[in-house]
Figure: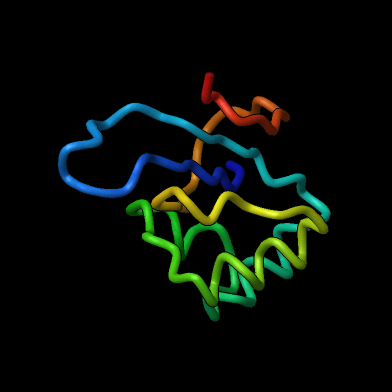
Length: 90
């Protein structure tokens, strides 16, 4: 299992098209779990969680890279790993 961040356009009219995805590397997982007060990936495994701007800022600091502020960001757990990070827009 691994943490995965996804981003979608804000607003109801935007559609459900994935615009950003980032697979969290294992060495960053513990610090990101701390942002939510989770002890393990099992605590996050049931759902995808909408990131507040504060959570997104903390996660960006852990990852040492900016996260897109123009998107609705979510974090969840996936079963297989695809170590990638990219913006899917245009």
